[in-house]
Image (cartoon, rainbow, N blue to C red; front, side):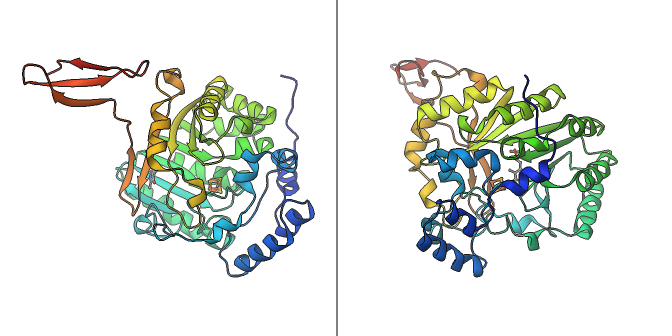
Length: 364
Ligand SMILES: *Cc1c(COP(=O)(O)O)cnc(C)c1O
Ligand code: SF4
């Protein structure tokens, strides 16, 4: 590939649009909408805006998939009764800022709440984009101590916000500390940076990442094939060539990827970039995000239709994070059930993903 990343990711970050005023100036918001958003922003109730520079041109040309994800809409200010501030109940498992421990063997570390772009459907929107929520250096030191004192923790998951928006100095200081904890077997980094800020991923950065002598998996967040720009593909290739297993998390979003065609193209594109689709999330019940949620029954049917159409390596698990902090579950379309057989015994009924036919199998 002849494409090269621009060398200065901080400059690329600063070239994205970050204010309501800039959006209005570029014709991406009307004056009235800007005023409504501004009022919410003053009350501290708006997820800030940040339009990644890589998508600017497509958004200005009206690409609905990218516009929906990054340009704020008035619907965000309508909170529905079923919606929660902290839909997946992180706070109850957060002993101090920056560390969430819900499952015994793994913790979330959130060293920053800043991102390379602000996704309007973000489920952590009550904290994300606001620097005042960032954990302090002292909080992070406590988090590392906490992990050190809990030998059951095998895996540390860096998330946020987006951990790859940290400077190298901060990021590698943290990784080096984790490296010294013997019972930590695995580090996972959840990030949207390879997609939203691909110039962050440079050969020199990969080289430093490889110095951390713990297996490290990278989970990339992408929701549509058009997010795989030539720059993003290069960033992913650098990570894959660096030896980091890559998986993808996506969110099923109405108006963005809520069709068989969009999902098929997304997952096929990911695997061609050596990224394994891992989770497809039904959107959490975060405040002001109803316009992103398709009816659940339709979502299940859509996910069911992937099987038989797509190669198995393309198919992620469909995940619901049960509201109130009850944990993630895989929601399986109903492929199997126990039914009464001809002789009165129970038999398993499996449905063919190819022609929908029902087949009875006498498994014990
Ligand atoms: C989602 C989540 C994880 C990671 O779950 P996996 O199923 O391993 O991807 C870990 N801790 C918390 C608190 C989570 O919400
Ligand atoms: S990158 Fe992740 S954390 Fe940041 S706004 Fe998007 S969904 Fe939220």
